[in-house]
Amino acid sequence: MLDCIGNTPLVRLKLDSCCKGNVYGKLELQNPFGMKDRVAKHIILEAKRRGELLDGAPIIESSSGTLACGVALVGTYLGHEVHIVTDPRIDSITLAKLTSLGCHVHVVDKMSAQGWQSARLERLQQMLQEMPSAFWPRQYENPDNPNAYIQCAEEIVADIPQVDILIGSVGSGGSLCGTAKALKQYHPNLKVVAVDAVGSVIFGQPDRPKRLQGGLGNSLIAKNVQHALVDEVHWLNDEEAFAATLQLAKEQQIFAGNSSGSVYAVARYISQQVKESVNIVAILPDRGDRYAHNIYHSAYHQEKGIHNLVLPREPQRVSNQTTVEHWSYAEMKGVFEHV
Image 1 (cartoon, rainbow, N blue to C red):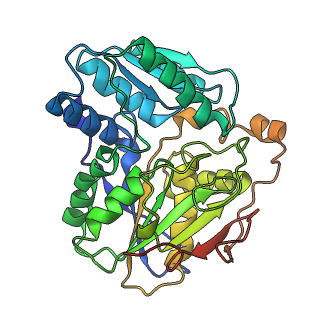
Image 2: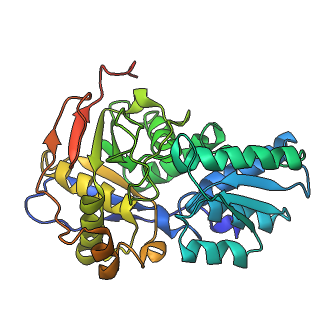
């Protein structure tokens, strides 16, 4: 099963005549459980190689989504007891996957000062004291997270000779920043576009812990987010992200989660602004199965008051200090020390 991780397809998307650039979707969602399988495999194998994770020692990680499944896959396969600290936002499908693999799932019952992520990390620290031999992958700060995507970049380079723009969602920072850094070794002029959620603090927005999107955004700024690599950032709100995800399924036959949907919307828009020779790679990280009861369920839309799932034709350009409510984008060059 570990050999099934990676080597995901790169698919050219079929876009309408308004789109000039070529858009390729990197289907990370076709890893056994999802994109974070790469991270789990690389971090755990490197920890074992360095002696940080001893044979039979437990593994503890904080996650409400795909990293949890990746750690469960790799950890249990290698004979480790796996503990996942999560929160009430975990969906029933992910929970079923974790428990079926024999994981111990610990659900925190309330937010702490910085939202659900900080509450999970506080519980994780308590468990590390209770299990001193346990290994914590530390996805938000462990450099083996972005380093796991060196292989992803090499796969992209093997598939197409030139990459001009890379677009990806940001949560822990590993996938976009790791792939971008490695791709820049081949294409120094690569433009890197980050996709975030309205209400995520990663790029200076105020925190909204009750946002509905999962898989991207954060109430904390992870150390693995290398802001200096990012040229441009787009924010989509919940309604826009859901609308884009439904469009991705209908237009491209890719049944995915909202991270992929938001990335698709941004890639399609940028393809309208560039020349025909420009190659755009969009990282599509998450399958749609865990979103069957929210993004793909009209009753959930009604419950949350998002009755009209409308995606604007184009985003609004703003300064990087502007608080955004709808799909907006800002230039990042000059904001952080840039590569």
